[in-house]
Image (cartoon, rainbow, N blue to C red; front, top):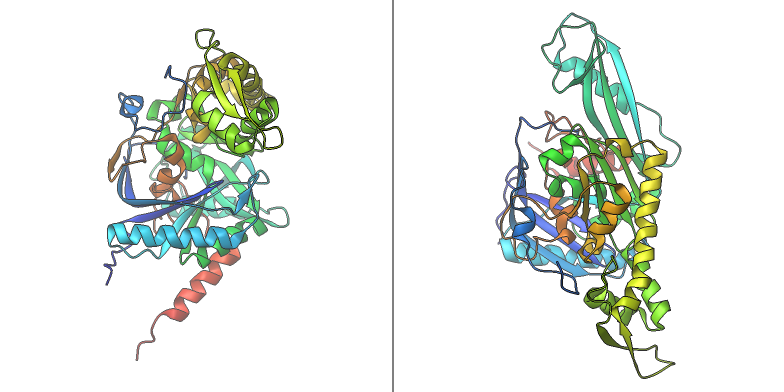
Length: 446
């Protein structure tokens, strides 16, 4: 019989990626003094643990891991769910593996969500104070007003993130309770997504044997575990370079001010290699992992490699890494250039002063940081999960930043973390239905 621990002792993070389902069980801590906003030279990828990449970086977030599991699935294609049953089955298998490892019983999970159809906006709200002192009830009244904004038809709110408060026109206030004033305002960052897409994710998770505690935008989850304190405060952009999507979030003064998913990722590089070398996508993926570099390096340009051509052509071919770089680099520059242009159009680049942090599987390609520095004009690094302890084997990787970030208290349900500045919404209709179901399952007292 498995041991059941209380919800306060551990949390479950569930990330449904392009081809893998990851579950991580653990807990996270955030220093209460930190501002909360609501919420190599070798020729291949480095899948090893990178302690050096995270040394010397200060973050007030820490993550302790109890167990983790990863199971493949075929349910996502080009960033869209195409097979719900395949995803549900992978969740079942991952849950079984984690329960076997840890001896825990998993009931609910925080789930990451990604969609190019999701929308985000920044806005301010303000209220007149009933007395000359700001009270907790005033802060709650202000948040209720912000959550009451009308969404476009067919969209569900994922989160309303509080940036900072404004008392009598004075901005930048972290906690206004107890201050003197006549008016209270706040800057909010709201994220909403199509209800149909959210419902499909929730149905898959339910069929996988779990309830959904909360839904988190994937770019925010990545930033939670990968950005250090200076990067949040001084201004940076975190780019989760996934297979089919690029998840982007910009932080300034400790709060997200921009978040969006772009419809391109590392798989576009794989397709370019397959077309340019006239080979299969499977072989192109191997070539990308073993030989591709994002930035042209004359030192390795004449190194050759052999690969299998497409089946109808037959045989083997030889190519140089220099020729491969001429295929890869233009695509990488196009992707980063498009992201930079969009941020510039929205006048967000002026806030990116600290640097660029690249996470996700695509960030493991050597040379990407050089291109990011060239395009954005600031320093760039590969982001690994910071302050990780416990069962960390295989988790100290950019591939796992979004899953580990879900353990952060900022993604807890509204009921559990009522005092957190990030307030996850109650979830609308699906959360109400889940609460009714939970009450029906409770035994009646006689």
